[in-house]
Length: 298
Image (tube, rainbow, N blue to C red; front, top):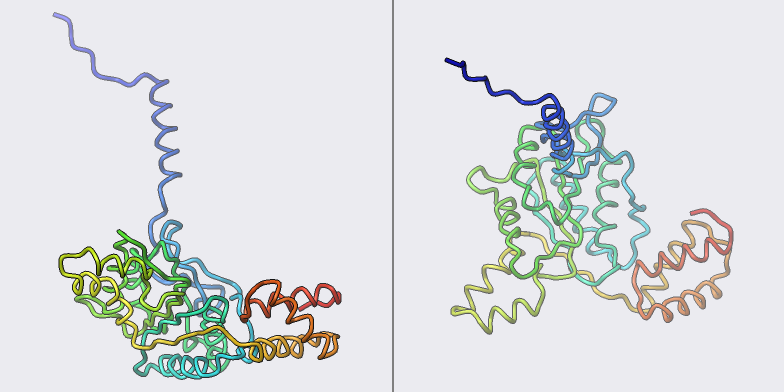
């Protein structure tokens, strides 16, 4: 009686399987870190980007921010956000903040500038940590909060240009993160977001819900109630000509551009007319153009 042969994988097939396994491992995202990455010194860096597909928190060596004094026309919003952030840095009660309104009026610049201004007065572990969360990674916020809950530092989560479209359910993850769910939001975490939309939803979507839902009030409430989770609303509106020129002149003085005031204003107005808009962003783009023409670095 013949003995049954044992199952075996030919050498060629075994090598192929090994290559396939190695390729899949390379494609798989790395496991999320369970704690805040440490820098070269005693404490972690002051800024990170949350990249769950790349393993978690990625340190940022230098935050692209501008001096807080350069932000003109938003003094009220600046003072309010500074006060709120200062309280949070001192471990006092503070509100999540939604900066909403016109494009190019300094919403994201203000968040980064306030972070830098507050940290200029703090040292070591007392310094605030700024963590940028991309819109597409909102659903992973609960994982990030679990990491930060165990840390001793204060964390400012920041999402730029936040908004949600039809059939997008990730806003529910943000609602849970802002209110903390059963665990409660970590006391050492605050969330700042910027958006062109006051309710983070497109107006046509809200109107459509009101017109087609069986219970329009409930349908709209489910979507727009997200913005209610932000205790602090800061509105940014289009600037007028005088405010625009103040922004331009502020930049020009700060960077010591060698151009007369009258000529500066004349060219700044022509630049804004060509863009069909006046804003802080347009003012900055004009200053970059002028600095380049003058051969000056800024």
